[in-house]
Image 1: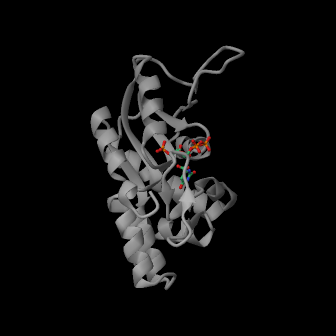
Image 2: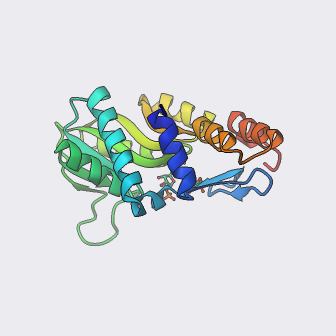
Length: 211
Ligand SMILES: O=P(O)(O)OC[C@H]1O[C@H](OP(=O)(O)OP(=O)(O)O)[C@H](O)[C@@H]1O
Ligand SMILES: O=C(O)c1cc(=O)[nH]c(=O)[nH]1
């Protein structure tokens, strides 16, 4: 029987959200060359996939953070998943922008947030963790508590481990880069040399050839 971790990894591959290209790397926003690009925004186009994600994230939150009073989405790609999860858990929701609006009411956080709230944040993807940890800081600055972070996918990069530790927060992803490349290999999508290159990148992305 396939685990949920493997099922979500397979889903991301099958809907084309993930492109693996160890021989033709992508340039990331950080300036890093990477053998993969993940666009989890595409998951919302697939009802069965987005439902499996929402069910999985809701179950994680019930297990790890039963005291949650609000589900928070990280703008923009975390928002639809936070909405689906909040609906399943029958909890209020908010979402957190990367910066306050420069017009209107100038708010960074929309939806419910009071100083007594206990928030679980949802992002679609964790690379460095910078986006969700900035959102966590914004929530904490209001006096509310961030219980933890859940996400669809984590690259498990060394930078994210350091950043989550520094923030004192725990990340629980539904699936991971390791599960993803294992699944792609089991589907016969790569040579042993390509698999080795993909593993090498995760262990030391900035030392990977091309960076
Ligand atoms: O862990 P990090 O290094 O922060 O990278 C992950 C973030 O990057 C992407 O968002 P992006 O900045 O592309 O914005 P979007 O959600 O508005 O598309 C993604 O949706 C995550 O929020
Ligand atoms: O850091 C990025 O540019 C980046 C990488 C990735 O896999 N997905 C994404 O949306 N952004």
